[in-house]
Image 1 (cartoon, rainbow, N blue to C red):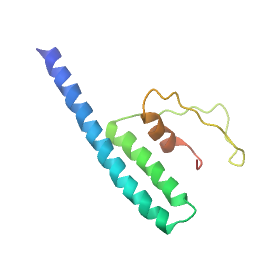
Image 2 (image 1 turned 30 degrees about the vertical axis):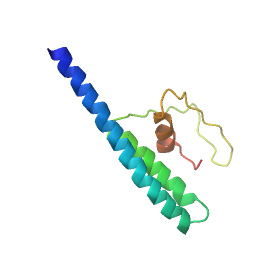
Image 3 (image 1 turned 60 degrees about the vertical axis):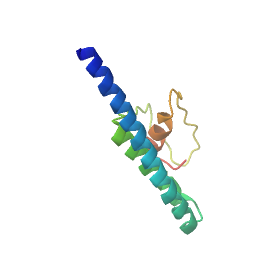
Length: 101
């Protein structure tokens, strides 16, 4: 019986996480549309995307670890890549990148 209870709890957690992601994305989408009307450069939209990524990482319990082999030069271009195992890669990148994308 405990195995069944764990399955039910995991299912409920996944449903809750899906709902939280949908609601957060919906809210931040409308905030981004409003920010784009005010800020023509798009910088505020990128700032909102960073907050969106951090919010989704927090509400879903996702932990993001970053390891740098050397310090990044903010004046140089970089290519950041994720393994795309899931859509959570997008949140992870937005939440931890030290520069605007």
